[in-house]
Amino acid sequence: MAAVQFCVSLPGVLMENTLQTIPATVATPTQPAIASLAEGLREYLSLTVAGQDYAIDILQVREIRGWVAETPLPNSPPAVRGVINLRGLVVPIYDLRARLGAVPQPPSATHVVIVVEASHTQYGLLADAVSDIVPANHDEWQPVPAMGVGQGGQGFIAALLSRGNRMISLLDLDRLTGLAPLAAAPALPSLAA
Image 1 (spheres, one colour):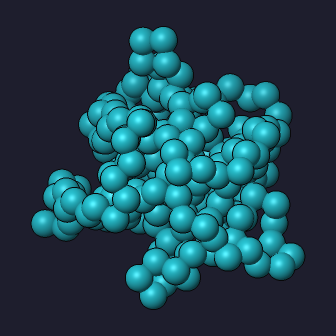
Image 2 (image 1 turned 30 degrees about the vertical axis):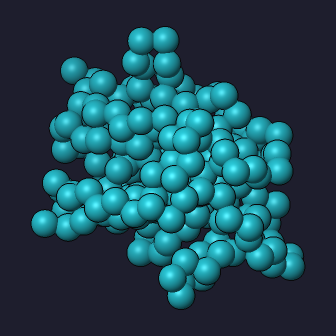
């Protein structure tokens, strides 16, 4: 059984440098977000960026930690804030507000960095807050409507989930981190009944 480490940060409560080990129930943590939809019930980490709800496959999450100052790198893309030292590993930090087309804000103690793994590489994602763990079945996810791929962060969205009054967008981490092209969105595996 694999284990995933989390430094827990809840809205209003920041527990920096507190690690909790949570057993992972499914193997292959580095598979793309869209591939996980074909396997039935999965769990997703829900996060908030600029008032919008997003999700990441929980198996791609390595750690959640409070904001720490990054080291800026010259000539980095605008959405890359810089790098941090994560126990000897240099990890680039992506500002999700900038990457998803929202107005960037200076990070504060209430922001979180979600360390994820995509294409066998670790990245930090700066988010406003972590909301909860959302279990979802394959058939609950809907395809993203065609509205001009790549504009305003739409090209980074793999699927949509409606829960009550919430619309949760599943992030495609390979596209978000620039490891996959934005030209054509991936097809959802047989969502139509």
